Length: 175
Figure 1 (spheres, rainbow, N blue to C red):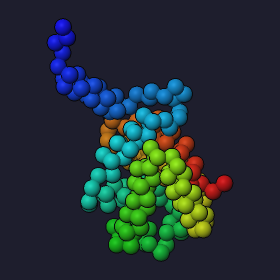
Figure 2 (figure 1 turned 180 degrees about the horizontal axis):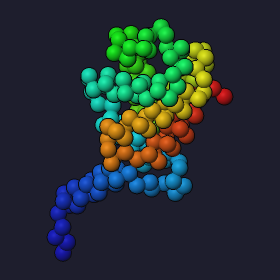
Figure 3 (figure 1 turned 90 degrees about the vertical axis):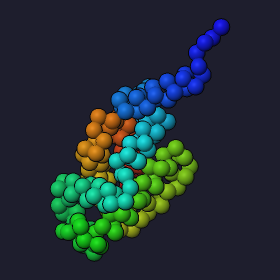
Figure 4 (figure 1 turned 135 degrees about the vertical axis):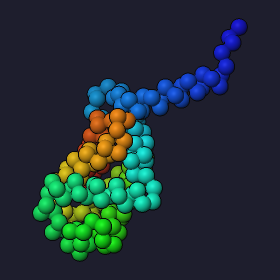
């Protein structure tokens, strides 16, 4: 007779899955693809890092500070939103729009047909604005600095590299 409580077994399974997400072990066969587990990790980690309310504004300021420190000349693309004052209303509104778009795209990682359509739309917008393709790499490096600083040990750089560089940035960069 099996005396194990099914509810206890379920909790143990849920706990093991959460530990696996936090530890950040890469379970994909190739170690570099943005598979279902990597997509789930990125979505979960993004939700934790991106936060709510005012923390989103502060998170955005950290992202843009990292971005502009890597590519100061990029401020020229943002002159209409006052990139010299990351706390200004104009720049904060811009940051909220950009990170809201990234939030949306990350939320679509598990729906490839919708994600592909959205990435194509964003690609068109960035082509129209003349945004250089390497700026998506800079944004990726900025995310790779700020997200782990927010999450600590629960950050999975392999999942982020695979999903941001291999899917999101690759889908937005001009051909």
